[in-house]
Amino acid sequence: AQSVTQPDIHITVSEGASLELRCNYSYGATPYLFWYVQSPGQGLQLLLKYFSGDTLVQGIKGFEAEFKRSQSSFNLRKPSVHWSDAAEYFCAVGEVVGTYKYIFGTGTRLKVLA
Amino acid sequence: NAGVTQTPKFRVLKTGQSMTLLCAQDMNHEYMYWYRQDPGMGLRLIHYSVGEGTTAKGEVPDGYNVSRLKKQNFLLGLESAAPSQTSVYFCASTGQYNEQFFGPGTRLTVL
Image 1 (tube, rainbow over the protein chains, first blue to last red):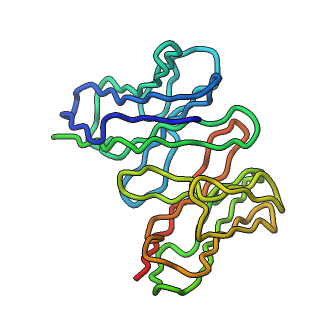
Image 2 (tube, rainbow over the protein chains, first blue to last red; image 1 turned 135 degrees about the vertical axis):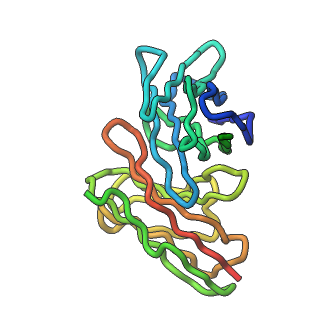
């Protein structure tokens, strides 16, 4: 069965520091992988996605993620965090064919210190 | 394009009351979804639809019903609300490249 694990519930970083949010998935084939961001009281916004090809994908707001098949991971990174990046981040895996169902991780809440 | 819209934004119900949440999308997407979001549990799929006139159960379907009579609309119904259904409900639709577009959410409280 598909599953997504985000091992860090909360992460606190200082503004300007680098960031890495972890995501591990379980899926029988190469999945569609996504990162979403949710600001308080808002819906989810897509940051980036991976379907195939280059394993390092670039997204909006200066974020990037790297797909590592051997580790079943899709970690999100940003070289320098801004105070406006404080939000909750969700990793998701989607079925490549068929139902197009998506499984979401439980989220990582990012706090940014000034 | 308005994208994905949800009505209402907030609602308070008493136990046993019924209500319908409306989701509308103007992107001509085939696939639509209803999720609930609870603290520490991420998003859990309630029901989804792969096209007009079709619906299917997700991870947590009990206590909910859905209908997709028109391609652009996906309705979520609670026939007899329970306090356990207090949550934030999100609708989403899937685009050409399989990314999901989310609505702003409906915050439901059941007393």
